[in-house]
Image (cartoon, rainbow, N blue to C red):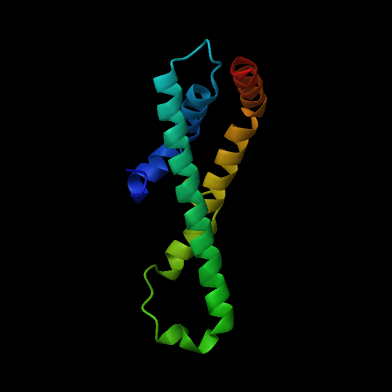
Amino acid sequence: MADTKEFYNIFCNQQKLERIATFASAGLDESTKASKTSSLYVLNNIMTHHLDKMAKKDQAKDEKKENPDEEEDLVQQTSDDEKDDEQDPSNPNSLVSQDARIAAVLLTKVENLKTILVQTAAQAE
């Protein structure tokens, strides 16, 4: 589901990211195991898809540097305007904006995740 551009852009909305991350990082006594598992799965898919998008962008840059003459022979899948939109921080669906939102949301959850890991380790002993 996160593979399509429409759903990915919906998931990368600030409020939705915060809700998903909150469910994923809720304490062990604050949430059910199924809720945590599902939200972690969705969060993992969002991150995987985002990293894939970034890798494809970097790969395209590298290929362009290596073979500047072959650019005319390639069929371009996105127009120059779309490429500019992907880098425009004012565009909420740009890779730059999504990257900033994901980082901001996840940074607020680091302490919660540390607590969960400590609790889980204590229960395992």
